[in-house]
Image (cartoon, rainbow, N blue to C red; front, side):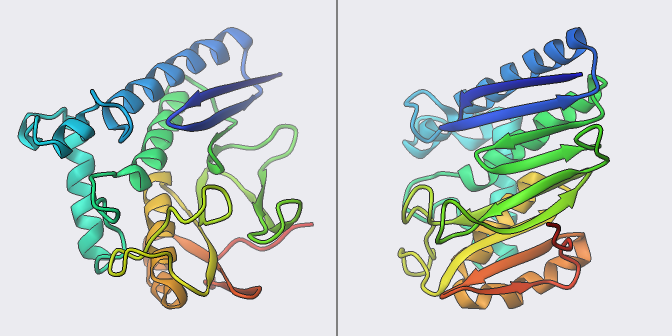
Length: 251
């Protein structure tokens, strides 16, 4: 049995592929997921005038009076800024925008909701960043393809994944939206960074930070392995660097 749903939320398409679950259970879990994603978008969107993030940025809402989730995210953003030496910065473009953490965090929380609802085999894809559980039945794992940063019709690497998350940062989808906070410009020499690990929120944030570090990013990602995260960096023109534990390629 298979259940597929696509929802447009958080400025992107979020798709869910469920395998092996009873239709009624899959639909009920999907409804919970959709409600959660829209709730997160309403509070965290940097484009909605009434979101908590925008109200904080305008000085209309004190962080202390924000919802617990918003306070948690802003605290995590500050810890990530310190951990990455400023490469991850929720104010990299001047205004408050924690989207580089929020999208992955919200999707990870959504995946946890699906698992709590009894789903064991699914792939949740939020704009290309994925959280997977179990396998793509009848297969025992999900096959993940990372788009080639220069060729939209090509795959830079494919690998099998189960019970993990994968996030990629690059300039090929939305233009120069990823910047080095120190310069305010897109870093030169790096085309994309993919991070695989147990939590999609951190994988998303780490890939953003590693990309912002430019050519220095691959060395920085070596330090992530101790926490269970591995990285693949594509440098210009087409040089690929992998941390030692990055998943092996499959055909």
